Length: 312
Image 1: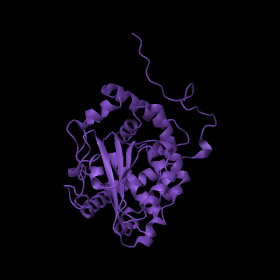
Image 2: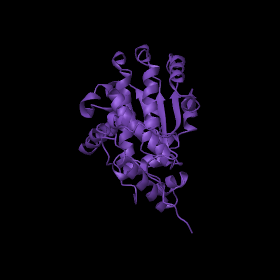
Image 3: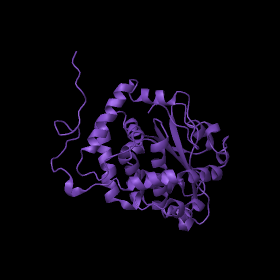
Image 4: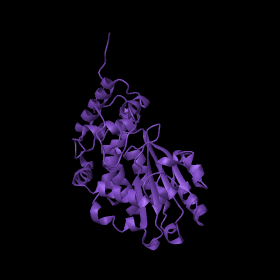
């Protein structure tokens, strides 16, 4: 990738591509290209992968989110294809233009346009307070995965922060907060889609907030639990995310949450993105073709692709 392509809903910092690469040790573009070649070659050689050809920009971002570790990228990519088989309720049969219409009357989710100074991207969710009894947690996480897939093809950042505004949570929505579903969804987003989660922010305001926090703590891995940040007021949130980067609803300088949510939804409904999502649904595994040899965590001494050995 020579440059970040302009995106209708995302803005980028000056020199963002160079700075992101520097964070994960890819100052040398030749090293990045070599690692990308290795990763791409490895995918093409896996007999159990049904789909073997992927956009190089997508694979480059995958390496970036795996901190430049080819082995971690291999492990997570294998999980992505395996989970697409094992958990189709999250990763298959998308009908983006129709299935999320009701969800967006209940909750509003958007990708904030401006990245942070250190090149992290923020995804923000609020509840409208309407039709709370109709809220479906799996539907929400399916939509979040659609957004992640969009960012995997258009964004170029170090990682992500999730912000949940709990102000309008009611008993009806709290009843739908299943820690098993939350755990599965976040596992897929972090361990399979490879997203680097800097922080998970929860803004208080609901009388059920203590229950919400308890459910999240039950659902999060030990690593993510350490990244959970509780905000008792908006001033606390501003210490992490600049006020001017937030929507008007949260005292910020951007458009309203409703406008940003509608803008995000319109973008993920484009023919281009629909085609991307449908293609990713075919990135599954044929377990009858999976090699029986056990790979250790480092893939040491096993078949695969290896870096070129240069000897002076």
